[in-house]
Length: 340
Image (cartoon, rainbow, N blue to C red; front, side, top):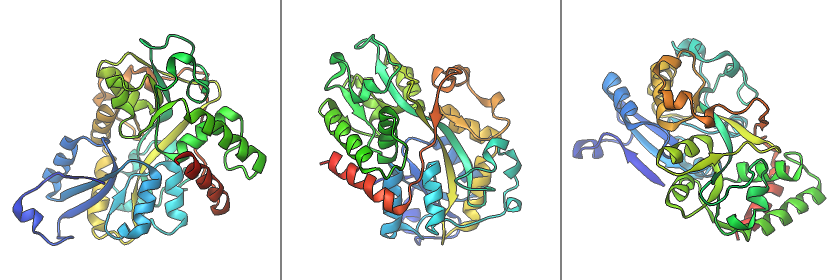
């Protein structure tokens, strides 16, 4: 686990674990500008400590293993928000506790994974697809076959993100298999396809998904749209794909965790992130899209015009579904076999 202590001194390090004026955040890597956290600290006097994870599933496993009660908020994807709620790991709040609650864009106020927004607030949303280095491969990128049945130029040069929910969902799109299927024949076909495809992959990596494209260690790979934009900004000649089979759309949200040791500070942080200028600061840093109204005046032109944030009108997107426990075990078995 990576740890970023944003205000550190001998006195702070020696302080009690949950001293007054502290906030403990469990967050994705490279997903919040340090300057914004420093701004929150300066405005509130609250010391922020951030631990990071590289997948929704890793975050859930860590909370289940004893970390619940040690963090105040976490920032999972949509399907994982629902899982946290269903498993009683998320606390509730009322709109009155967040003065900026009204800044949430209407389409994100009442969502299937958190109806009425009583456990979470929007953070950023985006898509998961793949990107290709156009210096290496100049062919069509309109199909997920680029990842799962790659052309000769890309064999052995592909990175896939180490996130089972998203990888297995994209594989299901490619196979034309419904999400959360219980059909054993369909699941076997999915497993067989993935094991065959794996032979053409170079690596599994989530936090390195951008870096391997920039360095040239991979010529194509599954990637989040913001990471693709960052790779281009760092000089990689990559193009982000909108495959005909569909890509994933996701919404990451800030969840108030059950037994949060600093609940009031957590609410202050959530409210702070709903301010349009602050939400825009995250977008400018991470290259995704905020679920908050009024961010446009604060966005950079590069972000506004990014092809990753301006998909074609005919692009197909679908959320990852949260499977029931019995079905999830079937997918967990596929993932375990794939990672052997």
